Structure formats: C-alpha cells, structure tokens
Amino acid sequence: MGQRDVTKDGSKFYGISVTRIPEPERPVKTSDGELWIPPEFGRVFAHMSYSSLEEFPEFLTMQKILQVLLQPCYQSGIKAEELAEAVRLDYELALRLLDKMVSKGVLLKIGDLYRLGKNSIARFAECFFFEHRQSDVCRSLVRKAVDYYVRSGCCVVKVENKNMPRPDLICIPFIDLYPDFQNAFEVEIEATTAEKNPDHLIENLRKTTEFEERHIWCAEKDLPRVLEYARKWANKRTVIFAVGEGGEPNKIEVDGKIPAESGSESLASEAEKAEELREGNAEDLAECSISVDERPITCRRTVKRVEKRFFKMEKGQKKLDEVFQEFEKATQSPKEGKSGAQELGENILEFRGRKLKIVIGSKDRLLELLEKFGDSDKCRLYSKQYNKRYGIRDAPPGKYRLCIGETEFVVEIIE
Image 1 (tube, rainbow, N blue to C red):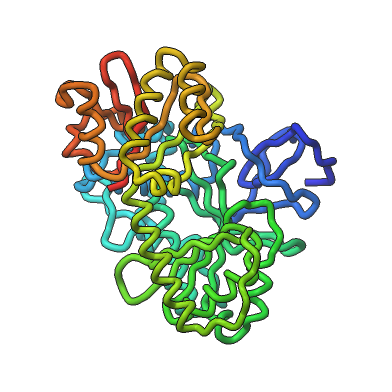
Image 2 (cartoon, rainbow, N blue to C red):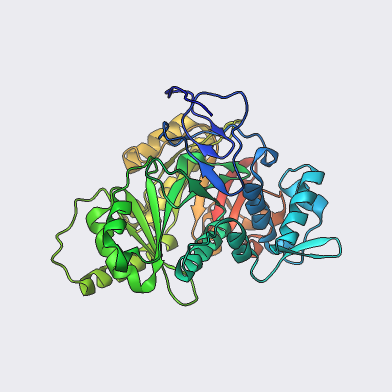
C-alpha cells in the first residue's frame, strides 16, 4: 500500500481498514474476514465513505443479511429479490451471497426461500472467525461473542496487524445500513490468560489503542480474576462478558478512568461487587435514556447522550417528563429546546436540527409517553430499515420511526 503521511482531516474508511489516512486511488482490498490497520496509522476513523452495502467486503454484508433474517417477519424465509430490496443490494449480488451462505452451511434453502438454520450464526462464526490454534474454550467464547454482536445490530471483524498492539476483534455499530465508526469498539477474547498467563491479561488491559471502549469475553469461572485485574489495570471503559453454561452472558462494566483500587480486597469481595454491578446494569436498562441524533445526507452522526445516572439520580419520572416536553419544543424551535434542556441537565443535552432520538426501555413506557400527545392509537410506528408499519404492542425490539401528526421521532424499543 505504501507509506502515506497522516493527515488531520483526511479521515476515511476504505476496504476494511479503519484508519486516518489520505484518500487512495481505490479502496484497499484484503482477504475475507480480516481487518488490516497499517502500522504507521493509529487513529480510528469517525466517518464513512461507503455509499451502499455493495461496496462492503462480503463477510460484512453477510452479517447484515443475517440481521435481516433475524427479523420476526422473515422467520419463515425470504426470497432473494426481497432480501435485495431490504438491504439495497443488486439482485445478482444478493443471490450470489445467499447461495454462498447456503454452501457454507450458514443458511438453509427451501424452494426459492432462504432462512436461518438452528445454528446459523454459530456456523458463520466458524467460517470466518476460527483459527486452528484456538482452544475449545476460545471457540465457544468467539461463538457467543459473534452471536451477541450480530443480534445487537453490529458487524464483527477480525484484526490482522502484527506490528502494533491490536485487539482480537473489532465491532462496528450500524445506523440503518451505514457503519457508525465513531462508536466502534475493541473486543478481547480471554480464554485461558486469566488463570495461566495473568501478565498477558494485564498487557491487554493496558494496551493503548484509539478505541474508547473495550469488551472482554471470559468464562464465568475466570470472572473474579478478570474483574479484579480490570479494576486495577484497565486504561479505558471496559465491559466484561462472563459466559456460563447456557443463557445470556453476565455483563459487568468497569470505568477504566477511575484511579486503581487497592489490591487488598479478596476475590470474594470482588465477586460481591460484580453482582452489585450486574444488578445496577439491569436497573439502568430498565431506565429510559434519551439521546439526540443528527443524521445529514452523508449519514455521519453527532450524538451527545443523556447519562442514565441523571435519570436514576432524579428518580426518573419527573425529569423525563420535562425533557420530553423540551423535545416537543425543539421540533418548533431548536434554539428554545436547547436552552430549556441545558437548564434541566447542565449542558448534557445538545440539539442539532430537528431529528431527535428517544431510547425507550419497554413498550409500556412508550405508551405512557404517547398519552401526552392524546390518543396513542393515532400514532404510527414504522420499521426504520424496511418501512413496515407496526402496532406498538406488536413491535419487536428495534429501531422505528414514530410519527405523531407531522412530528417524527426516531424510537428504539429495547424490550
């Protein structure tokens, strides 16, 4: 690829490289399943230059196909032309990718319908993320991680870079069909290092990369030690996923910016703290958090989130009602809405234009909020990706367009 000088404003995403580099003549091409970061560049890029999934590497586009088939309306299968329309692909390309996924055992084909099998995502992980030297524990963690992120709407890529510190995987969230590189995060798979090689675990926790968040996947039996080391050595926000036998992984967050705690505490006390954190996270998910979303035509995004603890501290309801009223004002006067929100939250809200995003914890909570606008039956809820209309109680978790009269919101239902 050759040497290029790093530039401050030439941030682009090409091929499957996440870098800050000047624009090359053509996208960088690499092998399926690999993310290559040139050693001379270290900045993770926060914009995008792809105009459609047709320009993506195949294994990334396949993950978006899996996410389409995970939608309840496609559980019985989808035709190639419907899939092409859903993800805005050329029909011939969509057909070729679907047939390739069938040949690898990722999808089933019954007549002219393509559908998920019992272990489709696990099979996809085996095709693109497994290495011969990996242990059974490592492979199990990789399966769980890939399944979790694909179902969460992210795309997962492997990293190939031997000349600089690198994570095992990188996860890229998506806004509709466009990558949100600004919020990409790194993933470490800790299969045996916690017990057999703690120095390597410390090295991973102190690794300097440009990602603001690190996820660590480990076995449940290794959680006390991984949590202990993360609290002492993590240099950034760290989320630990402890995988047991069956069920969802136990998710624990550690703020790496907090000064290291003393090492005199026992593993038992660490486990107690882990349980407290887990319960706290569950409460946070039940709370409603609100963010403001600017999405110009280029699909670049500037987001400033209202911190969940703000609502928790204020017991949620009263302040949430007031902020929701400010949202309504913002559709009429963004300046007035911003001013009112700053009085409430001391600059924790930022209004940019009229596109507003509301993250709702449950359908019941959404219905409560809609009562403020009168008859909730007159509100219209549309799938953002496929423009399909839903009744609020029938809508599965996901992102939607909520139309109330002439006002439109972006709504995410978590559960």
